[in-house]
Image (cartoon, rainbow, N blue to C red; front, side, top):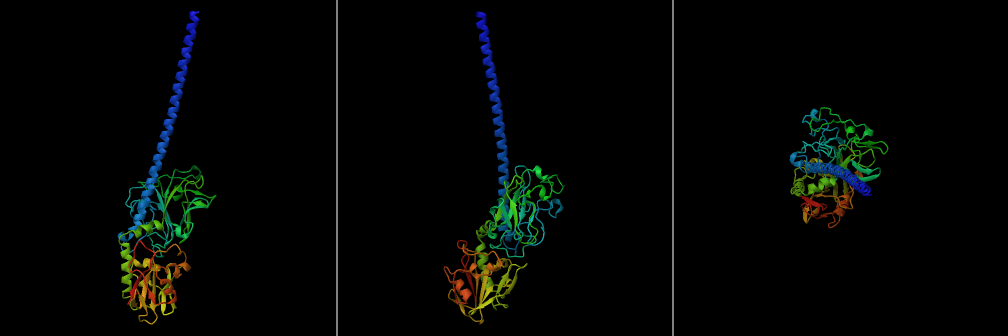
Length: 419
């Protein structure tokens, strides 16, 4: 009897020990799984942080490049963006450098020109260098035919999915540039990222389609912007379809020119340019031909004779009378002269033979997207608080307003008298 009890006791203890061992093994397995999952999540999060940081630094550097372009390229004005790096060590300035990219006003794509931007190579979380596209209307080499100012539209739409637009619902909101994070290659597209020897620092090659995705089902092709001058191109952000994992950050004209307006010397540039033009040898004789309208559809835009209304000839300041880089803002400089050649109007109470008006940034009720709109004076001048629009389009004789630009009221008309 005692022997039987002992045997049962031993068996119970063995079963208990086995259960504990199994429990420990199970706990260890669950712990290992959780640790592995947490580790994978941490790695993934770290990759995302690296990518987000690189994209943000690249965007900030590109905006800074555009804002300070007049400082680094005297006489060429604000707002221009660099060409991509399209040829690496085969180029004149080496890998990471911006050089010439295609024809005038044609958009361009390639790697981010990190060296030109004063950066280290900008890499995503998978150690791939970033890619970049610049609109033909913003690239600096060769420069645009059009003027470069806050009315210069970008050429890129960025979509989250087919028909869902992140930016570019109107021409006014088209992106001036986009920066790509080329995520891991998608097997379905057979992307070949083997080195071509031209990018010893970043690695890989310069074949756009090996890094940037496409999906014919929705007409997406991130690797190939339009080769037509001034044409709009579409880029699709990650998640648009399962065939697209490029993460895109974009830059709009507002990103660029909101920063330019904050420059301490921007107001001085506009104000001094206005007053010096009004007193220049080109303007003081009230230049023939008559003030000009502009055909923005031509490349380059062509000037034509202005119109006569009442006692005035009205239009724009001739480009030849705007010293570079002020001529980048020609569409914002309106001009009226007395048809008699004598003083027939007043500017803030002073008798003048003519008036130059810097129309300023468009307000919420003005549109400057196409040729017709850009030659419609109400899209530049207002009657609040001063009746400059009415005086201009009716050939009136009394103009009033500020004589210096301020960033606090960028849409205000700024006036200068031609004595």
